[in-house]
Length: 84
Image (cartoon, rainbow, N blue to C red; front, side, top):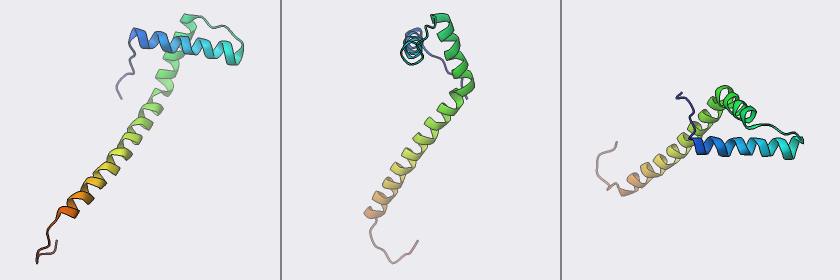
């Protein structure tokens, strides 16, 4: 799995969401450095789970679409005396 990399803007946005969560849900203040450290920890330790789930979901969607395409092609077939 490739490393999960965020742009500076994305990382800043995520860090602010972590800080907001700590403030509103846990009644604790967390500094930007600590929030960024926590983000890096989650990305390193849990990122693969989310990444894989995204791949599984994409694969399921693709399989469904391919099945629809196969059905559409079958509907276009013309009858012949040959059976496949």
